[in-house]
Length: 114
Length: 113
Image 1 (cartoon, rainbow over the protein chains, first blue to last red):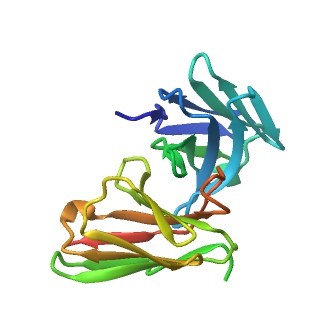
Image 2: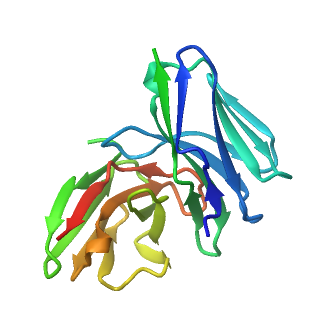
């Protein structure tokens, strides 16, 4: 059973508009959340993160929101640019006893249309 | 070279072959990871190494054998694989196993015939 879910496999947005990518999780032990971006033929690249003690973190055009009670987080990209077109992975971190482990969602393909 | 590099980028092997995947990180990190990404599935953590010592083995079959000779290099030795092992294998590193952010290599696309 997937502990981190990204229910939208794809999303298309017009350039300049807001992109909202969503992620749900089930494990209450997750205490840190990250978003990664992946271009074809490249590895995932860290984008932005948020601790479970916060509800918002902002970095330039990227903002991550966390709703702990709903076990839901979202990534907002404003304004969206064609170069943002990529697969976005949500990841959740927990301590396994010997190492921090990341559990990933299956990704959302974002396409920003010019 | 910068970041995390992986070789080869593509590999086709028969079920009776033995091959190895190589990962090198140029970030001065102390922890390294192997992940598997099968088609339409999330990344799955396979192994975690901290300062050359294996600290996690997430129920991975013994036909996958990791090796970490030093904190910059990580290998995944493959033998008698099955077609369902065909996947993208990603290596990652972090400053330490207690650090959240991991930095990924580009991956090796493995096809088992």
